[in-house]
Length: 236
Image (cartoon, rainbow, N blue to C red; front, side):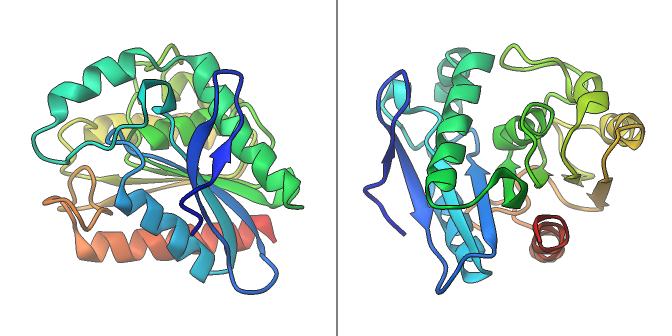
C-alpha cells in the first residue's frame, strides 16, 4: 500500500490509499470510505482487494477539511459538520479523480468497480447511476428513502442504475429499516442491469468492520465472498 499517494482535484491534492496486487491486476476497484474518514479499516479493504488480484484505491473524501480520521466511538459529533460540506459536485470530483488514477494505470472503466461502506455505500450507488463502470457494491449505504449530500434517495435513483449493483444490509441496522431495504429491492428490480440485495439477520450497521462493536463475523465473511464474486463476475 502506498501511503504517500495523492490525487489531483480542482480543490487541491487529495490523499488516497493505493494497494497493488502481485502480478497483472484483474481489474481495479475504487473503495469509498465510511463516515469516519479514510480509516485503517478502509485501508485494509484496499489491501484485501489487492490480495484477491485487484488494483484498489481509496480516496479521502474529507480532504477539503484536512482528511480527518474519526474514532468509531466518541467522535459522532464531528461527523455532521464534515457531512455538511459534501456536495454532489465534490463527491463526483473526488470519485472521478480516483477513477482517472486507475485509468492512468491502464484499467478501463468496464474493468473497474466501486465498493462503498456506510456513507460510501451511498456514494457507490450514486456513482453507478452516473459512470458506466463494470460493477458496484454497497455495504449498508444510507439515504435509501431520503436523499443525502444533495442526491436524490437511492429509491429515486434506482431506475437510473447503469452498473450491475449488489447491496448488503443488516436487519438490525437502526438507521436503515428493513422496510427501506425492501423498498430499495423493489426499486432496483426494475433497473436495466443486474441487481441483488442480501440481508443479514442479526447484523447491525457497520457489520463488516472488525474495528467496531457491531462487527458480525458471519455476515462479514459472507458479504466479502459475495463482493469478490460480484467483481469476478462482472469485471472479467
